[in-house]
Image 1 (cartoon, rainbow, N blue to C red):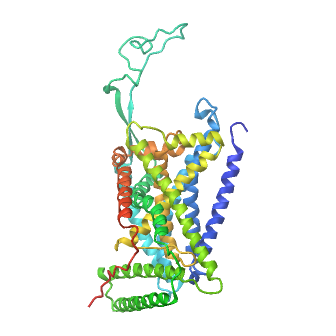
Image 2 (image 1 turned 90 degrees about the horizontal axis):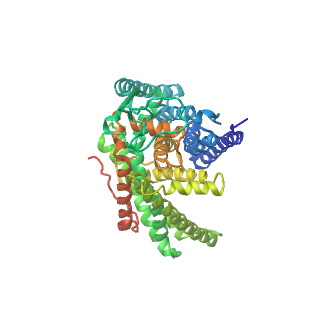
Image 3 (image 1 turned 45 degrees about the vertical axis):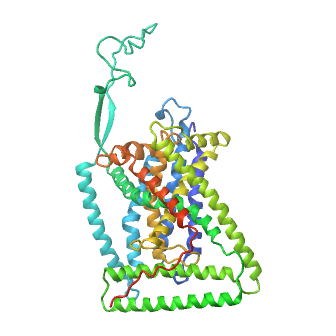
Length: 509
C-alpha cells in the first residue's frame, strides 16, 4: 500500500463513531425533562452540530498526521495521501455554514413556535423565515463573490537561463544566476522591482468558508478573549467564594425566606410581563425586561444551589457535604491547570504571532518534541489546545450574557437544558469552530505546515481581497489579547465578590 496509512483511516472512522456516541450521551443527560420523548428534529440537529464541531477540531491534528504519509517523499505529489483533506475540509465547513445559517434557525423557530398550532403550521412559519434568510444570504454572497471574490498573492518574479549540465559550477555571491545578463534568481537579494501581485479568482466553496470564518472570528475574538481568562479564573474564584462550613438551621430558614421573597417578586414581574405580551406591548423595553428577568432567575437558581450546599439535608447529609468540598477542590485544581493553559496560549500569541519575526516557535516546538516521545502525543496536546479555545468561547458567552442585558443568555445545565438553549450554543460553537481552526492553523503554523488547512485558512484566507488586512495587521489577535487582559483585571478587582441581583427590569406603566 506504499505510503497509504491504513491505521490513520481506521482511527478516523473510530473517532467519528465515538464522537457521535458521546454527543448522544450529552444530549440525553443535559436535556430538560419537558423535552423527553419529543422534539426529535431539534435533538438530531444538536447531535449532528456537536459532532461536526468536534470532528472539525479533530481534523486539524488529523491533517498533520495525514501529511506524515509524505515525510519520505521528495515532493508531496510523489505519494498518495491517506485522506483527501482539502475536499474533507470544504465539505465539513459547507455543512457547518448550512447548519449555522439555515438548519439551526429553522429548528429554533420550529421549537419556539406556538405549541397550539399543528406541526405543518409551525414548520411553514419556520420555513418562511429560513427561506427569507437564505435569499438574503444568497444575494449577499453572490454580489460579494462577483465583485471581490479574488485572492491577491504577493510573489517575486525570478528567472535564470539554461545551459547544458556542466562539470563544474561557476556561481558566487556576485554571480548567482546561470548565464549572463540582467537576471534575478535569488529571492533574498532581489530588489523591490521583482515583487508583483498574482491575482486569481477563488472557488465559491472556499469563499463561503472564508466569509463564515470572518463572521465567526468577530464572535471568537470577543467571547474567546473574555473566556480564556474567565474560564480558569471563574473556577478559582468559585473555590474562594465556596461555603466554608455548614450553616445552622436558623440561618437556613432566614436565607430561604429571603429567597422565597425574591422568588415572589420575580413571579409578580414575570406575570406582569406576560400580561404586557398579551396586550400586544412587546416593544424594545419589554424585550429588555424579559432578558433581565431571565438573568435574575438564573442568579437566584445559583443562590438556591449554594444554600442547598451550605445546609445539606437527608440521611446522607455528611456525604453530600464531603462531595461538595471535593467538588470545590476539583474546581481549584482544574482552575489552576486551566490558568496555566490560558497563560501559555496568551504567551504563544504574543511570542509567535504578534512579534515579527517570532521570538520562538514555543508551543510548536513543544508539540514536535512530544511527537518524538510518542507518535500521537504531540497531536493529542495540539487537539487539547484547540478544544480549550472552544470551551473558552462558551465560558465567555456565559459571562457576557450575565453582565450585558442586550446579550441573550442560554445556560447549559445538567438535566435542565431546553432545546432552544441547546441549539443556540451549538450554533455558537459551530460558527466559532471555523475560526478556532483558522486561529490554530495560524498560531501553530510551524507544526501544521504544508497541510490542507494551511492552504485554505492560511494562503487563501489571508490573501482574500477586502479582508486580508484584518489578518495582515493581526487585528483579531490584538483584540483577543486586549480583551483577555481586561478580563484578568476585572477578575482581580471584582472576581471575589458574590453575585447579587441587579434589579434592572422595570415594568411599563
